[in-house]
Length: 143
Image (cartoon, rainbow, N blue to C red; front, top):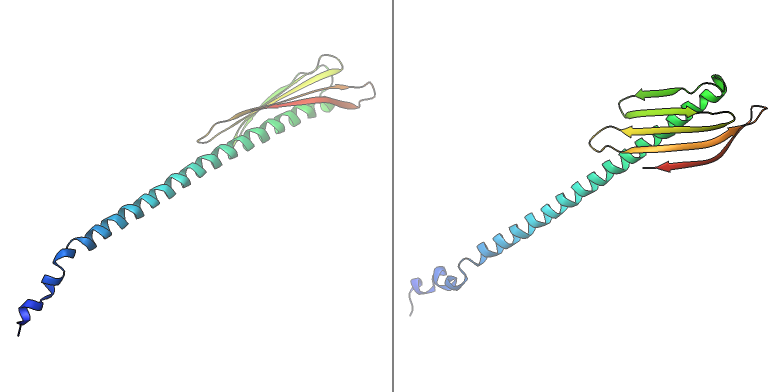
């Protein structure tokens, strides 16, 4: 009859030593690699969202600057060429009305503040008829 020592657990698992440790290390490396991929993807999405927000803010500021300059057509008369600059927490908007005679040109520029800075320009070209009617011939937008 064999002794109890012969059937010991250590002898049966002798060939499997380190197997559980190797599996645990491999799983940990895969897990941390997946976390790293998620972090890279999230940071890329955040940067894209910042760029999009900056573009929208710059475009909106440029539109607002052109509109505020257009207000000068009706209020200040044909001889005026006012320039405005307004700054707030979102950025800076600059607008200028250039009006030689009946034709006018409005230029609005917006520059966003923040981590990503974007500049956008809106140009409006049109004319004012003798009866005071304002016609816009075309607009140009640029980023």
